[in-house]
Length: 294
Image 1: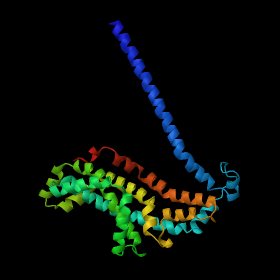
Image 2 (image 1 turned 45 degrees about the vertical axis):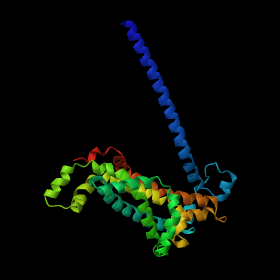
Image 3 (image 1 turned 180 degrees about the vertical axis):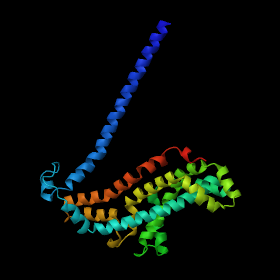
Image 4 (image 1 turned 90 degrees about the vertical axis):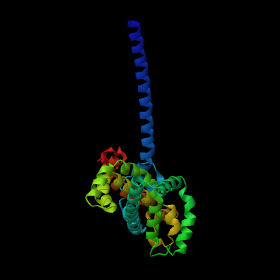
């Protein structure tokens, strides 16, 4: 009996030691990964606060005096206030369209049993596997034929195309939340005289608010950082988004390096603010969908 107990204790110590080693390896990996992500951002921030001469002399040193004027010059002189506004309009519009399209589509896919609905779900699954870059040329040509690349409508065109391309993935995320809603709740609403649209607006949408926050945040971040479609569809510099404007600035040999760093930091600020505000709803949205059950 004692022999068996000793063997068991020895086995437990070996397992505990192995688990400790594994945890330490994971910790080291996470620390290195954090440094790899944070260091370039910190370096860009410090570089944006230097003079061009100071950056050219020693790019790795701390700034001797903080040059906040770089941000003023980037915002005003480099037309970033205009690019910022264009990106904000595009991102907010895309988020609104994405939420409307995604929630309605997910409701149909999650709650309706019909061969056509199943076909839509299969199509969405296939669409998610298609590289988005392959759709760029067909989308551009279609929009040109429909006169949707003109200067006065090009931002709306980008809202619509980006929202449509995101629908399959966001429906994939939302459908489990929709399906977790007890059907008896919807049936009770129908007995009380509510139609499908009323049940969707008054019952389903309030129950999946955390998931909607998740879709909205992912959509905002995706479109704010979007680059390829912006430079493909937008030809007028006055309509450039931040990503397109940064591309122009990076290719400008007359612009100072510190000005470019300041522009990059300006472009990152909204993402950080939005994430800080909606961090908790995002975490709720990524957690189990059990919370929406009735």
